[in-house]
Amino acid sequence: MAVTTAATRPADRRPDRQIVRVDCPDEVGLIHRITGVLGGHGLNIESNQEFVDTAGGHFFFRAEVEPVAAAVAPESLATELGRTLPGRARVHVTRVERRPIVVCATLEPHCLGELLLLDAVGDLPGRIVAVASNHAELGGLVGRFGIPFHHVPHRDAAGRDLPRAEQEAALARAIDAHAPEYVVLARYMRVLSESFVDRYPHRIVNIHHSFLPAFAGASPYRQAFDRGVKLIGATAHFVTPELDEGPIIAQDVIPVDHTYTPERMARAGRDVEKLVLARAVRLLLEERVFLHGRRTVVFG
Image 1 (cartoon, helix red, strand yellow):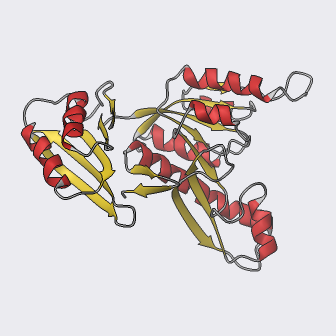
Image 2 (cartoon, one colour):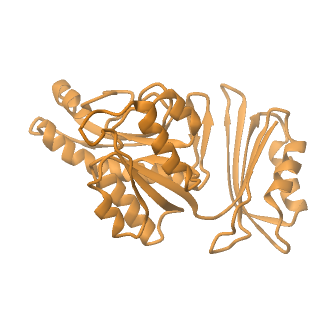
Image 3 (cartoon, helix red, strand yellow):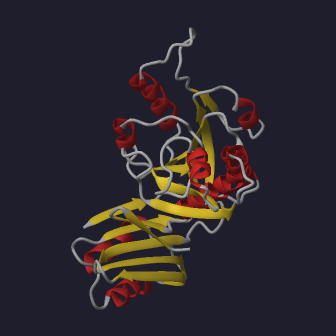
């Protein structure tokens, strides 16, 4: 059994509200056991969802709970739930709060700008604690929101490419200084090394400007134009060492036709990209995404 908790600073609103997540091999009576523990601690279930992958025999459960009287420590609740469930159960209990994220971008502002605006108006279930970029151009935009900006260049003063390990080490230092829950790649146009990805397992989310698995890699809009597609889209996914192969979190598409040039496709695609990435970040921060092998189970 693997048990994790996130018992950090209480949220600004409803500090005793918690999210309970369980996934484990399916068997009879799981919901009864889970709700029995929650009820025994005086926790009112305000919403819950469950799903069984019948092909794999695996059970998924998410609930938002609120104590009727005294608050319950997430660690003790997770431990007790784990004792009542199958041995390979994964239990995660966390307070509802705005968790920190670091956003990485390169030059394009649309995805970053969407996240900054949502954060600024309190409509993001997280806090952007820093932005890092391999170019300096986005610093002015980020500065308007009062958020720290880290310029982590990939070239030296003479314009020569820095060793990737050196640049990634500097990027990791900038990220780690803010202890984020997730690292969000908002059109960060550099391929990350396996060692960097492994530093943040299942904690890096990327937006790919294509409806994966179609048109992976570079220039997807040019690829889509060459194939004469009638739909273009965007995909938010976890980052793995295999380029654009990580488990998918969210996707969307819009229609196009023969009048669209690759440039017009790209302009239209930017609107989809920013919305899909924002949706994926929201789903992650609200603890609605379960990893299930190469796939995800996402409770909307």
